[in-house]
Image (cartoon, rainbow, N blue to C red; front, side, top):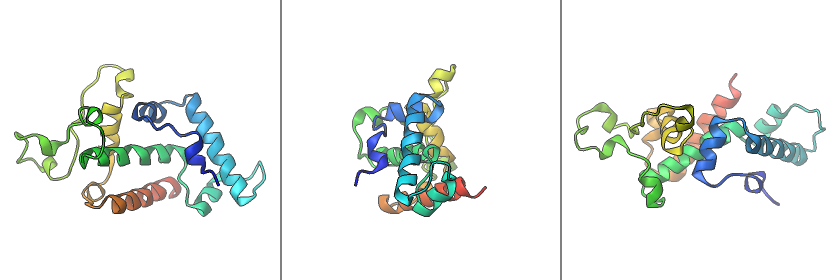
Length: 163
C-alpha cells in the first residue's frame, strides 16, 4: 500500500519551509491527497468530517505534519546526521563558546537570524529555528532520536486535536 505521505510530500527542506509559511498550491495538493487517503482507508463518504478520521488513524493534519518534519530535520542536524550545507544554515546556542554560561546553552535552543522581509522568514534557516525553539524544552532535550520522534508526534497530536 502506498502511504499518502510518500505521494506528494516535499522532501527538500526549502520546500518544507515554503509549505509551512504559505498556503500555496503544493500545500493544497498535499491536503487533498492526505484527506482523500484517510477517507479511503476508513471507507468514509466524501462529505464526512476529516478530524475524527485523522484521530482514529492517529495521523497528524497537514499543518502539523509539516511542523513534525521540520523539528525532525533540525534534530538530525543537531546530531550531525544531515549534510554540511544544512548544518551551515543552523547555529545552536550550545556551539557558541561565548554563550557557555547562558541558560539557553543547556536547552538546545537555536540562534535565530534576523530578517527584514517576509520572504526571508520563509527560509529554512529562519523558520526551522523558529519551529525548533517553539518546542517545549523537555522535548528538545530528549537524547534518543526514536524517542524524540514519538514524543514530538504525541505533542503535536495533542496540539492538533485538543481544541
